[in-house]
Length: 233
Length: 270
Image (tube, rainbow over all chains, first blue to last red; front, side, top):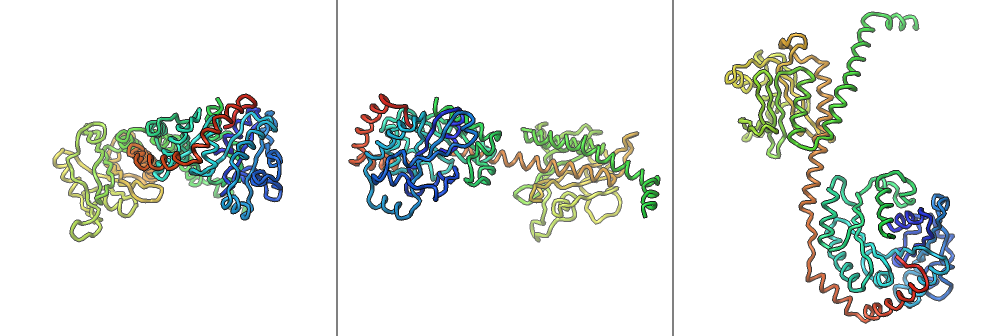
């Protein structure tokens, strides 16, 4: 979802980057077709002090974005199991991540930086929440998500995140969208940016590309564009 | 060989067959399919059921009909009843109850399938039943129609029962039509094979529309029951565990100063 929303923003001619802070289970690079062989440096290398943050940023601009004057960059996390284990075992200097995010914005002259986090709460998620201007919390209409979402919402309030939006994803087809929106809004006392249906087309795509580029006229693609406009408004 | 084919294609019986098939296909495309599409958009269940029966009756100029719904109690419940010549309209949006008990699909004691009643047989076999005259000897039990005739001063003659099924071929109901009438003079006639085929097509579309409606309603009911239940004490405990940590406390302070610095120097992060 982060990839799609960020791409929707980049399609409006903006310079956008995504940083994959899900160090435990990186994955967003797959959607952009960034192969492991091409990834000489990753976020982990920066955190260990081996390079500058901009050395870990890869230009992943799709043609549809560049033709609109936009540009996209991705800072991936390492896929190397040893690197992943090292971070989990030894941790890293949080200041370095904070500084890196600031430096990345400056070095690439970014209009927007999207921080993709690990599902659930960990130190990177909390850190991302504290330094962000807007937080989008994605949940499913599933009882497994309700408590965790409530904790995240409360923490976001304690961290004084300037703007918080809920995004309900994978809603069964045929469900009354407005009723779902109202229930989520009432439960979490936060605005709902979108209620997205469970989509067979997205499942069939199976993360092999960015959905809104593969199916720009699909109703779901329009919904994502609307959400993106709301997020950056 | 080619000459032989040409001779067949030029023959009157062949031309007649072609004309009939063309008429049937036009009928399906211009009448049946639009009805099916309209049914798919019906948002009121009672009106949907009524339209299904009324359109089926209209297709074959039937005087009467009954729409049964299969219940979870293994029976066929009378949902809609119509008889034009008697000005009889029960069930559905009329608000008038149908005074007949449901037809069991299996004998309540022996659990044997109830093949004696036409509608039940159609539901159990998922096949249409076409009867030319209910007063002729038959393996079916027509005491129901005959009792109706006696009570109402009516004469049931021809009968056509067609199952309604969902895409998994599970029978969800039956449409039973009574007394086909000739278009030119309303004389009672049999339900011919061609009109049976057309009504079966309609029932396919009607069954799909009904299944879709029921599925949508179930999902809507799920949303009404969609309760976002949050154990507040658990939430508070988990929040306290995190906010009470040194990490969280230091994070808050540092983030505040970093945000301030970032706003002064560069655009924001999301």
